[in-house]
Length: 287
Length: 278
Image (cartoon, rainbow over all chains, first blue to last red; front, side, top):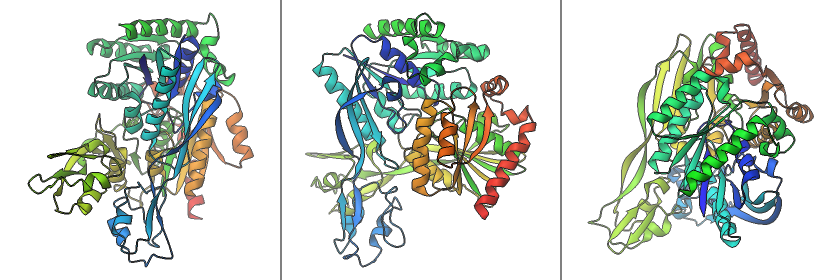
């Protein structure tokens, strides 16, 4: 079983549209939406939820006002500044370390599980999907990404799927690293803008750091051919294969509005370019 | 006033809005808080220099004192320490620097060492005081870099915080420092879905906010309909325009080439400032 994660560094380059397009082409795959704090893949895949699991992220310090003497020791020791001047816990700042509970002389603080989100196992018209929702202002998105991937692996093993296709988050930090550790390959979706080129270099650095083979795809390559050329030169110099160049076309947005994957549209230049890219990637994954 | 520019979905135009506002004002402090993938500098005539390193404290065990009792490992909520029969293994990338291990160690064998995880850069143009933070490649903790960056906020200036995408900790850490938040949305189903998530966050934090629709005309009307229904002010619409997109791709903030927009951004900022101070 192989694992492929779609990432980009910069947000909004087309990760989810391309993941959905691949989902429509994949023969025997499980899908995982690891952009857990702004998940969009379900808007195209329209999942039917089969199983929901409560996700408990970091624990939350809870102060018993009846016991608390307002001595302030907890506030002094909290490195996250999660206890305010009234000795109340600031929920969005608490990282659940338990130091306050340890130092409290009155045993007024307990560390409690919190419901930080939900992880779902679902069915879609293209195959099974593992996805999640992180509740408002909850932390530990990296941990939730790990849970989504564990679920996807379990489904893949149960149904003998040969590929896990992962839609990753933007950025280069915690949730991105959780989305790519241990995968066979990443596909970086970039676009010919100076911002995206800048971000491509940083995300490629992350892939190199974790020694994960990386492929590059240039989305909307024709909006600035000079920049596309720069990306091609950069990739060649750094021995990175460009597996696809997708033209700009408003039909991509139209497909999204109609809740369709672009590859569900037959015989269209964008659809053709993505199909060709999909076969290029499969070939490289099999090597 | 401190104004944050956020979105939920990535690539909707946060940096476009942040840099165009900053370039339209007579004086501003622009802080690029997307420490994972900062881009604001691409659109500014600015050279930045490293101003400081951002470090976190991670435990270092004095093996001459350590009795391998396991108290630190048992306490650590993040599994950042593991006890072997005659050694303590530390996983710095899991450590949140809470100091719990040092507190519980009965023989005071836990010391601290500093680890660099990011840098701050500073520069200025004629009217913009500019800072950006950079998380080092391979590091996972954006928050300490962001917290250090926020110490540079000078509230006497017109402060603009360019937030990272998403609705999780880095976005919340950024906008929680602000008096007003502009949410930049794209008029598409993904844009609407993620805007709703971002609206939940600003409500949760009780921050006054409004929406800018970017690339207006590229998709459908659902974002506008939603805003009207929820009584969310639509502050501005930036059209889905070829010239703006071309300028963006070349790293040019469009007010530089289309000065008629400067007035709109200045007015917008003044209006927000009045709303915040009233």
